[in-house]
Length: 163
Image (cartoon, rainbow, N blue to C red; front, side, top):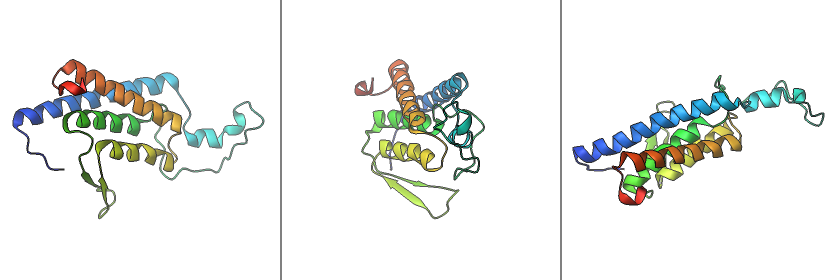
C-alpha cells in the first residue's frame, strides 16, 4: 500500500493507531489476569483433572509454537490486529491492498485485499499454532473493535463515518 499523506494526516493516523494499540493492550492484559482462562496446552494436558470423567487429558500433547506464560482469554494477536484494522480502515477504507514481509520467514510475502483480511489471518494463526481457542479470538477481536471505536470517537480526528 502506498499513501502520499501530508505530515498532519500521517500524525493523525499514527496518533489514533498508537493510542488504540496502547489502550487495547492494557485492556487485553487486564482481562487476561481477571479471567485466568487455561491455554489449550494446559487444558489438553490436564483435561483429566477438570472434574468431568468424560474428558481425558493428553499429557504428551504439544502446540506448534511455544506458549506464552499468560492466560489465554482474550487473544492478544486478535485484539491488536483487530484494533489496528479498525483504525486503518476508518482512515483508508478496508479495501487497501497490502503486502507483508516477515523477518522470521525471510523470502515469505503475504498479500491481503484489505486490513480486515490481514487481521483475520493473524487471529486465526493462533488457533493453528495451538495457542488459543475460538472463544479467545472472538473476544479479542471484539475488544479490539470496541477500543478502536472508542478512540476514534473520542480523539475526534477520524473521518466522520468512522465515529
